[in-house]
Image (cartoon, rainbow, N blue to C red):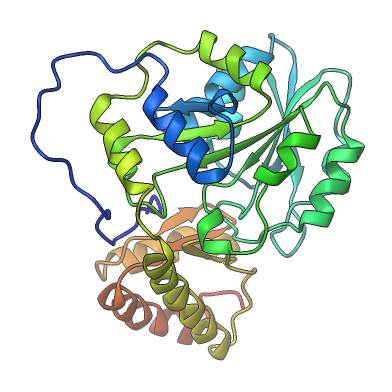
Amino acid sequence: ASNELHIEPPITLQPRDFRRYPEPTAADLRTALASRFGLLDQQVVASPGSVALCRLLIDTVCDPGDEVVFAWRSFEAYPLLTRLAGAVPMEVPLTAGGEHDLPAMAAAVTDRTRLVFVCTPNNPTGPTISREAFEAFLAAVPADVLVVLDEAYVEFAGGWNGLPLLGSHPNLLVLRTFSKAYGLAGARVGWGACDPALASLLRSAQVPFAVAQPSIELAVAALEHDLTPRVAEIVGRRDAFVSWLQECGMTVPAACGNFVWLPVGVDAVPIARALAARDVLVRPFDGEGIRVTIGDETDMTMLRAALDPLLAEDLVEA
């Protein structure tokens, strides 16, 4: 229900001595990330999961009463972390198709806005945004407002990514994680890339030794493996599930992550309970919809078998 990958990570750690602290800023991991993605070490910030970096960003750039803009519904941590910092969450409704309304988000920016989150593919609804639309959004946002492009699921989407835009946009930070496509959710490793001056500020504000040494070594090793086969496996099952839903008469948003959004409205919780009774766990959002994580073939067969009678009973809003 938290979008973990069912496929085992591509690597394991050999037993070794972990008595000593890691390098305070995870230098080995930052170097490996820079090499893998054509960045400078100085542009990279490593963190114990991307959500920890979200909190660090808000705490660093926001004072109490400042505003943080994001689409809604989107990643659940955004409003929570914003309120914990004493800042004000500014939620901009998604379009009817579950997509970011970037012009409306740009219009929501005020002189109190310090940070904007853009999640693509959007969690939990699934659609991506286009590079053209995002660049137009960047042009519309003041240069002193930090824009965070959250690409937690980018590997499943294909197409463009935000890293090539960093050189021309000092107010952009691209956020990534090892928790999804790499299958290392339990290791808690995330990272961001941005202007070196901002990255230096974030590293200085971060708790030293934030990323544990075993997690650093797992992430560095994972970067050496080709994700293509594992991603293709998930994408194939995702697209097949979407096709099945469409054959059943259900309209769903574009699915570009390792999950599918069922826009079932008030039936979300009843359907989730009915599925749980059939040993199928999904993530309901009360009154809105259900996020279904793509699992292995056995998982998907169970899901279709459990969901089919619910579709037949018209509990799902097509």
